[in-house]
Length: 383
Picture 1 (cartoon, rainbow, N blue to C red):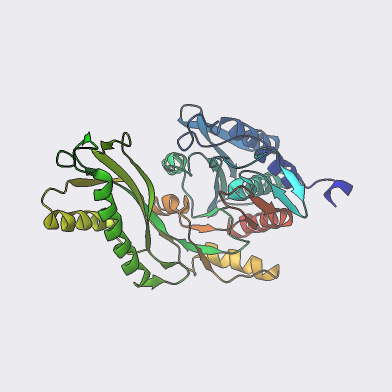
Picture 2 (spheres, helix red, strand yellow):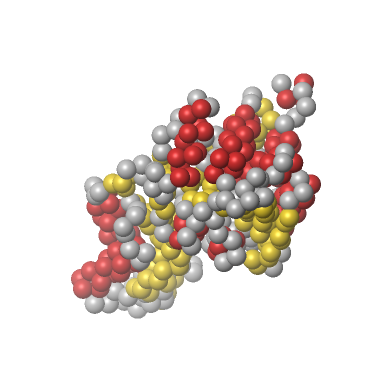
């Protein structure tokens, strides 16, 4: 049907964004980064008469921030989304935005160039249709969310607001909470020796097997443990493992990466504490056991009260549109936690899609337009 009529501006922008490679180079060595997609977003905002700032958070990896000032004082609203994507392994044509059966396919279509297109087009339409009678709007497209959120960290050092919408994919639901995470690296140390000399060697990989068995028990306790409304339970899993030199050599080192998903109320180093407790127990059982752990990164969970004015305004708009306004939670982590920690209360709201980080990622096209139109209403109501 889109081919028979003038394409909605938000769909045209989304196609342009998906067609640009913005794989995060911190995740995939040689990844293109966010420069080209940031330039396209800046062009769209400037075409709407919006003042734009481009700020590098790392060499060649810019944030984009557009600002609309109201004609009178009022509340400030921030719309925020990330421009980087994960890698494209297993995808035949990741940057070819194919539209089929009401869906748009391509890397970043769901996560989260559809949400970015919706918020940018919403801001442009507000600017072109009289601007803001009052208040202030900040539209921020940030780098590096898929790795360490350098973009969001740089954003909150400069901009704040009375409320923010992070346009991650939520199936057009109001998401008021999400989990946090912690990354922990574990190393077991053995002794290298020829494979024919067992008395001279110590197998660091077999020692890591003992660690994995104990961590499985930790995960079982979490599975049986407390849950949070809208989020479920905390969890722990082994993510990566490396070790060994050759088939005929006892491995002197094995390194394991562990991820711990966290809930509100848990300490920021809860995963490290659990791992260190496991290592201490194994060392008591075997005085020759040698291992250590360190925290690589930790990010907090996020929550905003259901009765925050931003949530109430957004839910009213959804009710008027005949959409589900019941608050929900997201299992994945987002930059909303960075905004909230810095003093800008944030809610999640974005389009419908599937295939997050997978080879068949897509977004439902109509939902992108609905998201954009909802954001326009919210901007005028909240500001």
